[in-house]
Image (cartoon, rainbow, N blue to C red; front, top):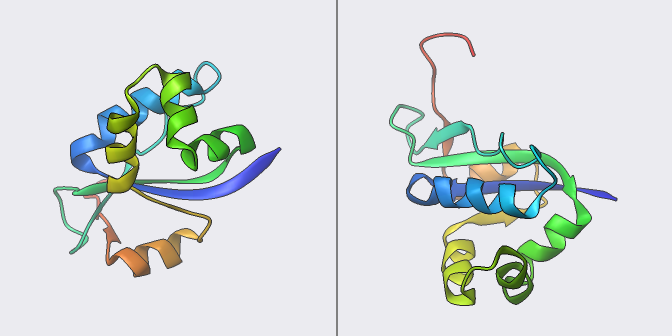
Length: 112
């Protein structure tokens, strides 16, 4: 089963989030998350990153349960709790999440 999630993470923890997603996802499934940069002005540097789309319901359930996520990822629950509290995870469409957080897509000089 799949569910839609928009996940906005601060640039300071994006590498941790990517590593965690890879650790709890099937091989290759978490490696392309959080590649789109965001900032308050829409200009670089990115202060946050967004990943939006369908994820496994089991992944979504873990995002709502820090204790279970910590156990699966073999990471202290305090670290998971701090990480999740720094992120914005919702079922909102990207446009709504960006409006709510006051962030914009970072403009690119070249097509991506």
